[in-house]
Structure formats: structure tokens, C-alpha cells
Image (cartoon, rainbow, N blue to C red):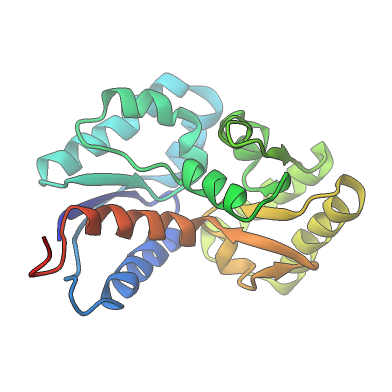
Length: 237
């Protein structure tokens, strides 16, 4: 199988989760070998600073990582974080290797499920950004985000707890309460867990009675499909 490059560390817990999930997904097929995986781990605090203050600097920081991965011989690269996709288009235009977007994978999954209105949880940069609404709108789906106060709470817990590998029941309940309000007041039909640490906190397929898209899961599914597409089983064709 081809070699996959992961821009990781944004944050560490989700990078480990990606690694395990990709190997597990590949291991489900006896005719498809596990891919080579190269991880370039970045500094999540520097990444968050650049997201907030310096988008050109963020592009340069991520491109440096992609060039290191290309130098290691990867055939496909992904960023194991939703927030960094705020500059995905700029990266894709300059990347030395093909990139596979988590945002597009989630938008396609929401459309596949037939959702017209979908909630979005993530960092405040993701929830306030245009990249998820734009991708969803192309597939005739509307993205609904929490209130400003809810976004502040979600972001504080995300950065202060989840990125540090801390997953508390009280935080789980507060996140679920936001989903319940979006369900009751905004009429959402589903919710995208648009933060790769969120599935580690909200592991159930339903949150407050609302179906959830695990962004890591759909991204991994797309990754494995792309890797296998270029490597048919022995004897195929």
C-alpha cells in the first residue's frame, strides 16, 4: 500500500487516534496490507497562535511539514486537525503531495445522511470560520453554529482540557446541552464533531438524541479508500 503522511500534533491525542484507526481499518481487509505512515508532529500551541494571529505564517508552518513528509516519500497527506483546514485551499495549491480534506469528507457524509441543517462543534476558529459552511453549502446543507457564549465555553474546554488529554463527564454534559439547544431551537438534524478530540469525549453515535458525525472516522474512511484505490488486491484487474 502507498505511504501516508500525517501532519500531526495538533493535538497529540487525536494524532494517536488517527494512527490506531487507520491501522485498524486497513487490518479489516486481509487482501490489503497496512500502509506506511509517516507522522510529522507540530506544536499545537504555536499552531493555535498562528490560526488566531498569522494565517500566512500558518500556511508556511504547515507547508514546511508537508515538504518534510514529501521528502520522506509519502504519496498522500492529511492534517489530523479540523482547525488547520482554515487554510486548506492555500495549502492544497502549494503542497508537494496530494491532500485529503476532513471538511469535504464531513460535508459529503452529512449530505449522504440527507441532513439539510447540521450543527457544528469545534474550536472557536472552526465554528466561526467559513470553510465548513462553504463546503456544506455546495452540497445544499446549512451549517448552524452555537451562540457566541456557547462557542467561548466550547473553545475554553477544548483548548484547556481536550487538547491536554483531559476528558471530564461535566464537560461532556455541557457539550451535550449545547447540542440539545441546537436541536430544540435551531432544528438541526445532526451534528458534526468538527474537532478530532471531540470523538474522544463524545464517543456515542447519538448526542442528546441527535446523530453525530465523527470527523475522524469519516476522514479515516476516506483516507483508506484513497490508499486502496491505487493498490488493488493481488490478482485484481
